Image (cartoon, rainbow, N blue to C red):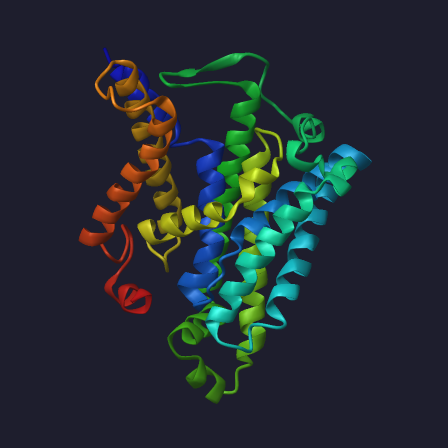
Amino acid sequence: MIDWGAIFGNAAVELISPTTAAYALAALGLAIHFGFTGLLNFGQAGFMLLGAYGYAIPALKLGWPVWACVLTALAASVVFALILGIPTLRLRADYLAIVTIAAAEVLRLVFTSNELQAVTGSANGLSEYQAGLLAFNPFPAGRYGWGPFIFDNRVWFFLVIAWIVVAIAAVLTWLIMRSPWGRVIKGIREDEDAVRALGKNVYSYKMQSLVLGGLLGTIAGMLFVMPRAVVPSYFQPSLTFFIYAILLLGGAATILGPILGSIVFWVLLSFFSGFIARAVEAGWLPFMTQVQAGQIRFILVGVAIMLIVVFMPQGILGNRKELAFVK
């Protein structure tokens, strides 16, 4: 017998989970890169990795306060964006795509290496670095909530922080994209030669966009690992591909699209994961093991996203003008 209540309850939790918020913020950063500027950044996982380790290493190894750890991660993100952008942004868009995906994977392998185990923890990663942040936790100890939304005080704290940050980032991005700077960025997406003919420094604007979207990805990396340990295997190239799926699902050149896309993506993933696992246990799928069931969920989520894209190719919150660009 399948416990439908548990399946739907677990899926409902993903509506507000810190992981959903982190992916939404990372997708918002990609919206600045790809949706608004037309930059093909396939290394958002690298920016998230720098956010995670840039916060965790100073907090755990040096005992720095929260603000210093955050600034360290953001500074590392800016340096990374400059390293990626300086040699590529004057060239065709596909060069940036190649460099970013390679650089993100190089970063992951560097942080996995045994030579840096004393600093990064190698493949085992880092844990117990949240003490400085948890000192600000206003929620009393215990578990509380309602329905499926029953969490301990740590999870509530991380959850509230994550969604406040997402809300602030969404408002700031909306304001920026309505500003003269944002209009130039959108012009570069449509026709950078025309923008260059108007006397604008297209290279400089692209670099600014790469840095800004990367900073959002870095903050997303910090939010993503706050409830858990920092492990390099979290930041594989598939992470960036999931974020792109979320972005296109919600709408590539929208503000709320990445947020809604992240919610839909994680709710579908949780639902299919719970359903398939319990269907195997109940004997509905006797030809399948639990290991196989764990992989099938991604196929089903992919099919669901494909159906949404077929019937709403511009994304859930997109428009026809955006669709013309994405094509």
